[in-house]
Length: 311
Image (cartoon, rainbow, N blue to C red; front, top):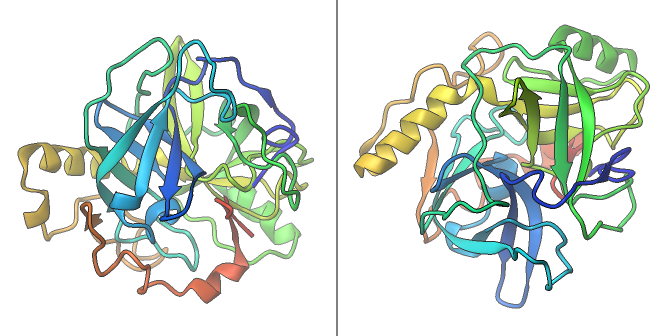
């Protein structure tokens, strides 16, 4: 999905992104890192819905403390966890990547270490326009190239007002919608961005000594092009959704919930009213193959999953 080292970035120092998660997809014959994510407490990881909506939880692993994916001699090795349950926001739509957010519950609690620490969520409804944030991942270093870096890459990008972002897309003749639950980050001149393979990874704002997760890599038009910044899931719009599902899981009543949590979707005027959350335990549910989604419509966009859902 992006790069020149996440496109225009540099190799991250070991342990400087301790909340960074690598989402591993396993099959009968192989396994590979397909997306990023962010550790938010000792049992839960946030990632993009498009990274996991078509994969059973039993085929997912979460790797924490990873830095160089080809170095097996690191002083502090990574740790890998099985996924007990995935919760995909039921308002997620592959046609426009609205509500591109999912929770992964780990089968065992994480023991925090120097290089494995969770990140804080932002306050609900916070506006980060103009702030400089950092996105990290193991995605492509240039759009269209197959090379994927071994070491975690990071790049600083500026948060852009949504109305400005919409005008930039319009100037380029693009028709994709930027919803209020999305966040744009990058530069008018391009050059710095996330890219394919970075999907689900964290966009982090560090301020006053506190790091907070403000976005998840979602989609973009190629990578690092002028007037076409990266588009992220705006985490501050989903704080209630996250809290409700984690609390319900902790109480053991997750599977009995039918009503949607409040304030977790784009407004009805933006698109259809959101629903609560698609739930899957270790075995595949009827939704795991993504059959309700119109995958042909995704040609309009490209995710930053191999895929970033980058257009």
